[in-house]
Image (cartoon, rainbow, N blue to C red):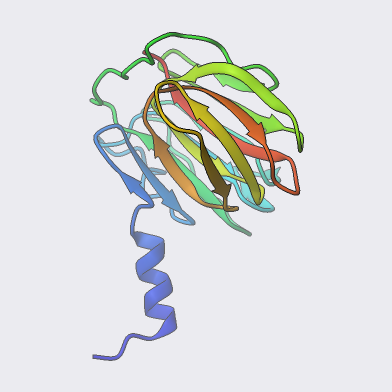
Amino acid sequence: MVITWAALLLLQASTPAINNEFVQVSKNNAPCAAAGPSCGERVVVALGQIQLGGKKMSRGDIQVFKTGERYAPPTGGNYVEVAWKPNRPKATPPSVQIAPDKNSMVYDGERFFVFEEKLAVGDTRARHSHSQRVVIRLNASRLQQWPDGQPELFQDQVPDNIGFSEPVVHTVKSVGKVPLRNIVLELKP
């Protein structure tokens, strides 16, 4: 069987980047734009220049949609649709709750919040915590981390990579060649 590049790209676009009990995340596909019954609140994150509902969005811009609210899928560029599941379990909190500094709050809702995670090269974010969260990486960077009770680790930040992270308490230093820049959607415990 021969698979063409076009078929492979179509398959990748229709396969969720993340699909767990909390969230379904799709890249360059908006399966929850029609607000089906398996779709709760949704967040569209621009990975480039896009148009969404007549609004121009740039890399890192977001648009939040309430449960049941419909929208036409974005056009013109790359994006991510984060669809929280309406019947998701309660989020697991970290062992202690310490707000991270040096970030910019973008949206604060009833069940989750969104912030732009920023850290200059060589800068350290003091010990802080996170609940379960979706992380959309915008810059190619590198982090040095000291998670509570675990050995030091290094993590490369690959642009446009999307991950789901479990609760953590840690200290972080930006050791890459460019500043850290991520969009983080974090569940409220």
